[in-house]
Image (cartoon, rainbow, N blue to C red; front, top):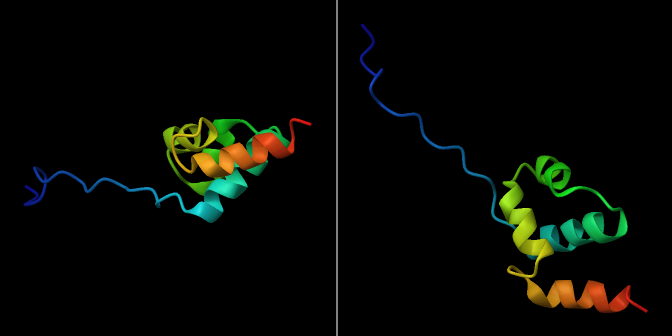
Length: 72
């Protein structure tokens, strides 16, 4: 009988999305047309974090910059 069989495993946490990561995420999504789940796998983060960056919930200034630069 194992002593630790009732102890839950610690959750694996993904790294925080930094400003530099967000810039790269936006580049990959809007310029390279990479899918959100592929970007998430590349950065080893949750796809929801990628979605937040792409939809302007995190680092909205970066989203405004990249969309205004490439809309003309």
